[in-house]
Length: 198
Image (cartoon, rainbow, N blue to C red):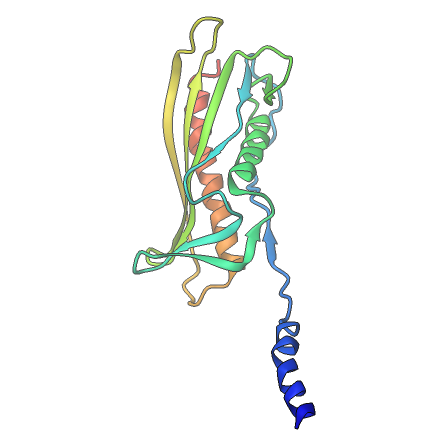
């Protein structure tokens, strides 16, 4: 009798260590700028400050907005870096390829900057009710001097991309659509910056 009781006591411990490990899917947030590279054709230099993340966008998990308005995350699907960090790296490569500036500088650079860009990632999700991925970035362009930092331009740039119609929708097409949406938002920001790059 005592032996059987001991065996029953051991059962919960056995079930706890048999939980399977699921390798998460990881996606780079790296849209490619269309068209040829025009590196360093501009005359001015741009300092790109660290990108902030709006509340709720600090984590790496892929986010979706359900048709009822609730927000869900993919437990086993994530970005390779926090979304704000990935968006900043994407913007740095995008603006370098655009040729708008002689150089795109990082914080801590000893090179003088003619203009400074502050950016916040406002939205990055798959809207399942609307059938589209959505990305939004808020940007402020400054001309910093020793005494003042006047605002040159300010914009909110929104990009969208269609989602495939099938439901439930796997993480892979969600991630692809969100990357495309971010690329469309960056294209809008490039258009704003181009008006002040000369």
